[in-house]
Image 1 (tube, helix red, strand yellow):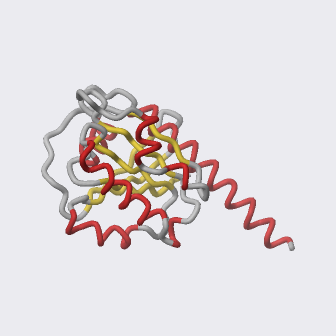
Image 2 (cartoon, rainbow, N blue to C red):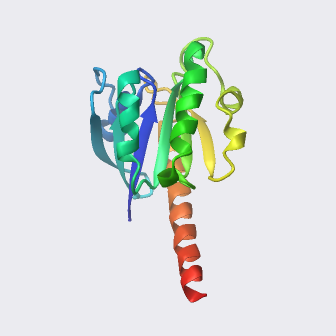
Image 3 (tube, helix red, strand yellow):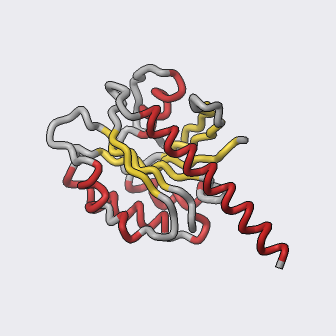
Length: 180
């Protein structure tokens, strides 16, 4: 089974670095993404994820909506050491999750840059991102560091489980509706 994953987040949160660390298992030098990168990633359990990493600069965020259709899962990357931008990050996350195409789509928040001082932990991010208000979907938060690799494979396995469960639920719900 193959799943379409959208990876969003503000600029310099580490999206592209995460994508290529997962794909190549190495740290690469990146430049700001203008447009998108797309890679196929296989999890340890053999699940195939096609991950779309979309640029996060302010002027590009209005283009995010063009990538929403047929999304099976959303990875939202947060620079957990950049506390000043968390309110903007929360607003952008909720703007995307409120779109009709994203209703019920599972969410994984990657609290990236956990290796830096004064980073927000997972509990702080749940509060700062107002995740308690997202009761129309399953969501998880996982601390990660693209530099050390900590948490990345666990995060992608979490997401794979969420999307498999969601797709199975959506299929059984649509079958149930057809039987009525």
